[in-house]
Image (cartoon, rainbow, N blue to C red; front, side):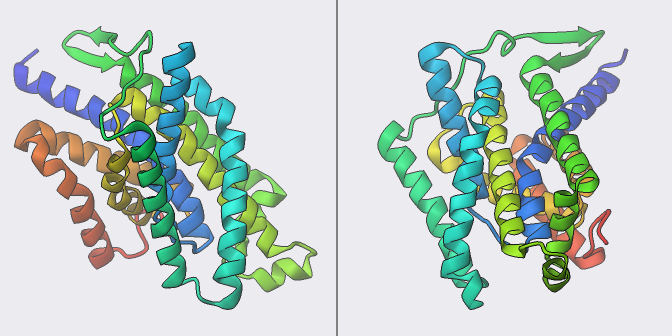
Amino acid sequence: MEISTALLLNAIIAGLLLGGFYAAMSVGISISFGMLDVVNIAHPGFIILGSYIAYIVNDRFGFDPIVVSLTVSPLFFLLGAALYRVYYYSFERRGQESLRGLAFFFGILFITEVALVLTFGVDYRMVSTRYGDVTWRAGEVGFPMRLVVPFLVSMVMVIGVQLFLTHTFFGRAVLAVAQDPLALRLMGVNPVRVKELAFALSIATAGVAGAFLIVIQPVQPAIGREFIGLVFAVCVLGGMGSIWGTLLGAFVLGLAESFTSTYFGPSWAPAVSFGLLLATLAFRPSGLLGR
């Protein structure tokens, strides 16, 4: 196998594995922003919070971070439900969600970051797993387990969310709530309650994605800001409110960043998400699979 071919194949594998992680981070934004019209820019803050909870339990008890995140996801669900209640009564019910609601979520992001800095400092934190340093090889192509394991769990979570939203009455209500809340009321469904539970689901997925992040790389409180543009880029690129589109957009972005890092250097990779976002808005505003 030629070196250039091996380099290409490794870049493709790394891009796909990275894309699976991006899908896990972005599926919550696809729900809150794409389906509920709630611009939750604090979403990456809850991802980092999930990372630190996984770190604490892993550091003290040695439990796997991903198992920890799945265990505490109901707590993130309750946190999301409470947060939406505050958002609804303070802004959405009064029709002030556009600018003031955006400032509200920015404040949540800032408070989360400051609280983590005061508690843990600004040093990078990492976890210890049995598979963190293991790489499975097929010839000259490497499959690092620190990417493979989060990728597999991400696929289960994203596909599970998609099946839940398309095969349950509640899921169909979520898909309809941003389009016609009056029709839902005529069917005896409370749109506010639907949005509350759907938003809570989006925060629960963020908490799980946080464990994936700290398995893949060390984290520190301010790192969440780096993912704000990325998660919205994936959501817009895939198509607003489309879970399959989010998955496809995440793979496209992961591959683009992997190729950029491999052939042009990692310093160019962060610009890829914003470049793809601008290109999508200019040439296909509905996204790849948008309605």
